[in-house]
Image (cartoon, rainbow, N blue to C red; front, side, top):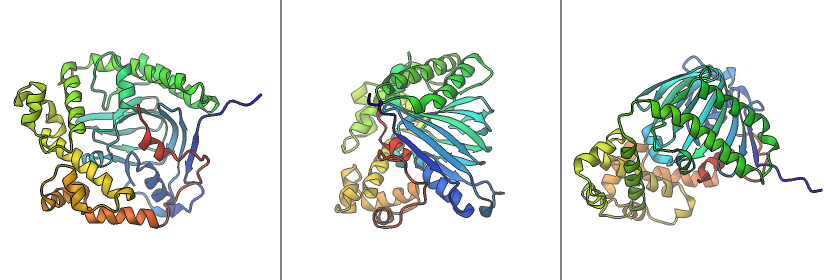
Length: 351
């Protein structure tokens, strides 16, 4: 009898590298989601141990991740640049962290579970920790929620009923996921998504939120419309008010947590321009063709705000894309599967 195919698996580890190269390798690996920064007291020669054991269930990703103490940063400029539209659910089995998710203070102890919206800022400082991480596309989790909810930075305590339940499930999942077949993966992914939604929905509904569920749903509708119309020169607040039949005051209130509607539109356009400048497939196009294609009317103005957002000029990003295409590969552990590394899985994950 033919053995059923197992899930795609990917391993990253720093243990085979020289100590002084370990943190740089980890930094490059985790950069698909976070900018990692060493703690001030860390000495490069002391090394940095980290590993990721990742499994692809098709609809979501499951990983067992271990790392030494560090800082994780996902700041607004980074959010705009990579455009990830997923939720990250993390069980800190050991270790812990302190930090902020937008303006929400976050403290995690061993056994606690947190959820992060990767379209919003997050800054944390961690201890040496062992975690279980699940990446879920936004649309997938939204469909499992009974009502719209602001989940970013919510924490379920390991000694609470729902937190303990979800933590136990995540431990069991990562222990058994290696035996899951590709035929069973969709069912496991669905059960996992529904478990996450059920546990966090209870917490979200019992917290006083500054925005109602109706506001959250309206904001998401407007955001989807903006993304679909980014190339249009007619995309501006007045047109949005007319399309959605709302007042300017309501529109501005909805986008206030995101820095304002004009800022949001600009950040989305900058992110798309950045991606095209970095993509070798667009290497034949002139920079100003890309600029104008995303709704900017002045190349000089674009260059100023682009540098302010990303810390480099458009031509420098284009040069980086060329270097990535022709230069040396980053330091990393050998890939143990032909289906791509976990970094590429995160980028390509869809609901």
